[in-house]
Image: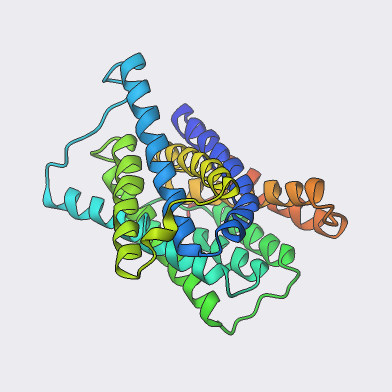
Length: 305
């Protein structure tokens, strides 16, 4: 296992940790706002501001060589960045949070965690990434664990909310592939700032077109607090996610991201007294899948692709 891949997976672990916390607190943020799209816009705008601030401070202290932006030099770069901004940082957020408001949270969590399946399929075809049978086994463990955490109550009949979450998941899967390709020529900071800055502009335009622009600005102390907290979490998620993708395979990074469910379950058990006993076997299965992803290159076996 190369040190570069190890660093990438470690960063993906940080992303999973942040994701697990964010999943837990986002429910409170949406409830405080009452309007999922307005909340998403405010949260993403806060994340864009945090990223811009961290970038400015990092560039001043670490130097331009360590924290830098890349100028797109080809039409493919520009189209790719446009996709990342709108179809990664705007549209799927609206679909996801609007869908979450109308479907069961367990159903939503399961559908979203199938992201690793779609990324694996696309990465093999479009990125020529190498998958071993150990990777396949790890992905199977992760999906089965998610099904178990959902209580086995996942419906295969898509209600409108589930359909929106599935659409968001597919858009994010394509975004992972586009991002991975762009990272061959552009810096992670370029992708992070484009995703959140451009995405926020697109969300503000949508809110303006739908008459929700006035609802974006927080009107209570509770709303300000949730926007600030979730904005910082989202900024950390995006920054570590792009840094991880720059160092490791897309399928490996996405598989590690599924481990965020461990963090969410622990928080729910500790803070909401949610029963964990029945979930322990599934959480252990989830952890085993993540460990298998990490160890896959070291284990003997032929590649599937």
